[in-house]
Length: 179
Image 1 (cartoon, rainbow, N blue to C red):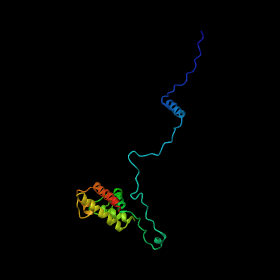
Image 2 (image 1 turned 120 degrees about the horizontal axis):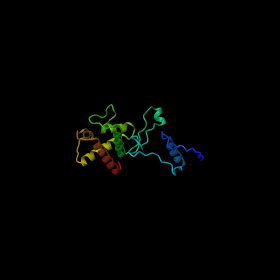
Image 3 (image 1 turned 90 degrees about the vertical axis):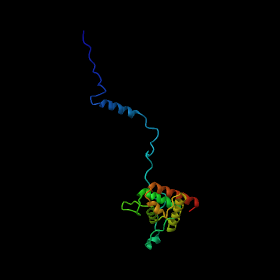
Image 4 (image 1 turned 45 degrees about the vertical axis):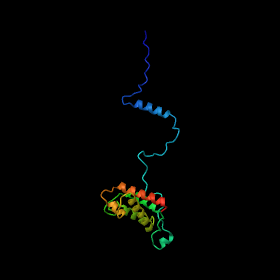
């Protein structure tokens, strides 16, 4: 009886290094249809992106006359409420400090933040005075009397969050009063 001829077997799909399986998976993935919708922009699950402390307010721009006379640009008009919000955002961006207006690292106290907002060209000295009056009104209304907002800033019991809350309440009060 003659022996039947042996037909060669197809190679095993799995090679000793697993490359056959990888090829099979790649072929399967290539056969799938394209996604129905394009993926949207990546949004961080931990919060929003950083924005500058003066976002939403135009930068002071020197006019042709300002440049010809070599004088600084006119300040951007802001309300007392906007000034207080900008001061809070400036402290948030640069850091908070007690006992000095600013330090080498860029941190500022409450007065230093107000001075920085004014120096960057937002508001006038009258705006700052109105804002400081609102700070004093809130301090006295909430049972934390002080001779000045700076004294409150430098108290050992005051924290950065307290300063931000004070600025937010004063800004809300100024906005209600239309200042």
